[in-house]
Image 1 (tube, one colour):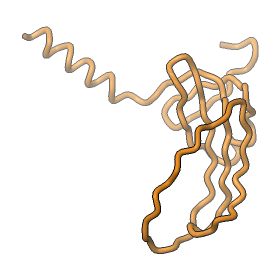
Image 2 (cartoon, rainbow, N blue to C red; image 1 turned 90 degrees about the horizontal axis):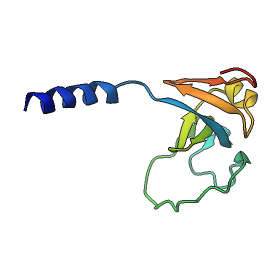
Image 3 (cartoon, rainbow, N blue to C red; image 1 turned 30 degrees about the vertical axis):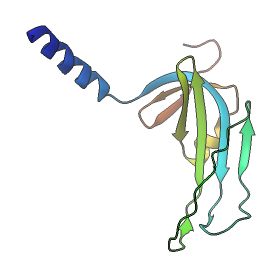
Image 4 (cartoon, one colour; image 1 turned 180 degrees about the horizontal axis):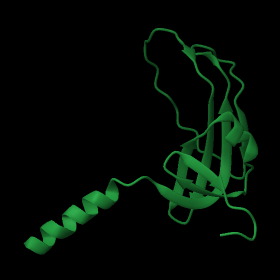
Length: 114
C-alpha cells in the first residue's frame, strides 16, 4: 500500500511539469484582428498536412473585437500539439522545421545541433 501511495505521489508531481516536446512544425495558422461576427476573416495558413475542420455550433453572444492569434502545430510520434506563439516567432518558423517546445517557449533546433 505504501508503494502505491509513493508511486502515485511521484506521478502527480511529474504530471505538473511544463510540457516538453521535440518535433516538427506541420501546420501554421494566423488569424488577424477582427470582429467576432465577421464572416470574411482571411485566415493565413501554411501546411504540410490537411487539417480536419470541426463544425461550430451557433450561440448568442455580445460582439467583441478579437485579438490576432498566431499558432503553430508541432507533431512527433506521440501526436500533434497546438502552440500559441508571438508574431516574431511565427514568422521565424517554417513548416518542416524541427523545434523544441518547453513551457511557453519554442526553440528552433538548428541542423547539425542537438
